[in-house]
Image (cartoon, rainbow, N blue to C red):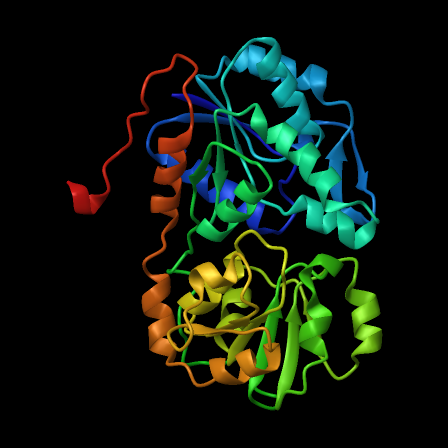
Length: 346
């Protein structure tokens, strides 16, 4: 099947949306499907206001039309609500073509952190975007409940995965020069990640921030005792994560939080607030701790058996995630998608 995926988030961005789409495309192609991805690198683009590292496509409509006309997709999935996403939505509606969407980012909450826009207004815009889709894919049950509260319909699950061959417990540790225990935050260093809540905690040992973003310089200035490592990639990232004692995930706006699974696969428990995302994957005493008192969550997480974290993460695979995606997309001819059976089903 020819599958078109349209996304405003793509390489060289480093985030959960890009990782999820990249892994999904890998598996779709491994199963013999032909995938084309329409992304900002194909267009003239401009820096996203307040976040210049993210590039937005400039007037993508004509190119979106050209690519889709030439590719003749048998299924269309629109991953994001940016300029490319809206252009793809217009293309489909003008031709009465069914399409699916995904809710990767709590855009209304992100916007409110930067501008005084009421949630009711921004949710109304985002709801309108997704209301035209046959299905909207959501990562967790908590996120489905939240979106239903705001009037979204036709929501179906699309979980996430983790590369357990890359992220695994390691005996050899890095960051040996830092006082232990080591509490780590991993991810984009931006206001919506709520990293200040982590950095202001009174914790023993060391606080380490892995990642980069527009808020890094300000946070480094305000919290000189913390260690900011910037981006780490592949094995280097996995080694640093496996060397931590606890991953602290203070975000209240993520739809999932892939780094939590990566930490668990590395044998590292997670401390977080009990909000959508963490409360769907963190089980108190099993693989971490969630609590409105983040300090308590971090200290309780230290007591968790690291082997239990790994056991939990092994239930999540990118293959299963991609199979779920394939089952949810809508072929243009209305037929059912034929999905490769999982090994356990054969």
